[in-house]
Structures are given as structure tokens and as C-alpha cells.
Amino acid sequence: LMPAPVIQAVVAMLARDPGLGIATVRCPITDPEVLADPNVVKVVVDASGDALYFSRAPIPHARDRAPERTALGHRHIGLYAYRRTCLLELAAIPPTRLEQLEQLEQLRALESGYRIGTIAVDQAPVAVDTAADLERVRHLVATEHAHD
Image 1: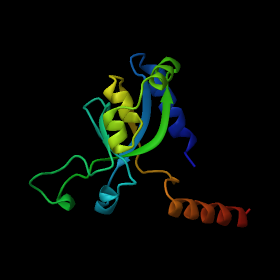
Image 2 (image 1 turned 120 degrees about the vertical axis):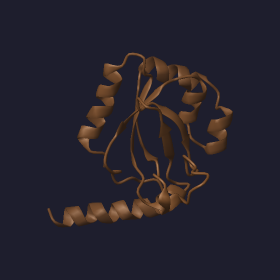
Image 3 (image 1 turned 90 degrees about the vertical axis):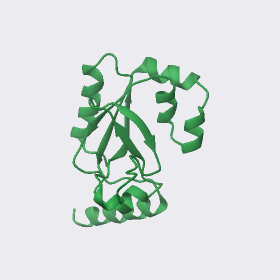
């Protein structure tokens, strides 16, 4: 259910930057409930849009402000484009400490020194990350086919 222009933009990002091993997608988080959901992966990026860290926890954490009064950060959208060499190298690296702790495979790349570039989109496409998501997508697809 990923829009084709988003896929094309991720591939183009990787093609433009030979130093980039991986490219992926992010969108703003606007809902505090989404920020708190451990099934929603959050990403913090640097000034150029490269990922600094991914987490299931709310990041960045605003120490002195309530979450609803803070910019809520970015949601990671699980689409990746890899350089072949990067993917082969990562497959040969054993799971890392942070990867095992967060259960996020992209942390293996960050811990191993690979850059992960991100592109920003306005909103998350429909995703299937949980059983509830699967039911919602089944209903969506059935509704679309009913109108054909």
C-alpha cells in the first residue's frame, strides 16, 4: 500500500548519494497516542535527514515539557532501499545489542557505522504492523473491490 512516488523517491535518494548505504521514509507524528505506541517506530534525524536513532519509545524525550506541548518527532515508515554491498555486509554481521534490545534491525546498520538517509512525507501510508492493522487493510481492500 506504499504510494509509487514514495518508492521512487527512496530509490532516487540512494542513487544520488554514493555514501549512503540505506534509504528509508519518515513522517511527522502529530498524535501523542501514536508517539506512545511501541508498535510505531520513531526516528530522530540530523540536519541533513540522516537517521541518528530509531526506537519504539517516544523520542526525542522532552525532559521539561509535557509531550502534548512538544514537537512530537518523526514516525519511521518501514520501506528500505539498500545498496547491494551494504545489504550483504549487514547480513554477515551478528545481531547487535541495540537491535536485540529494541527489536529493530535498522539499529544493526547504525551501530555498525552505516548511514541511513531518510526522506520526509506528509503522512504515513496504510501499514500492516499488527493484527488490527491487517483487519483494517482487509476491510479497506474489500471496500475498494466492492466499488469496482
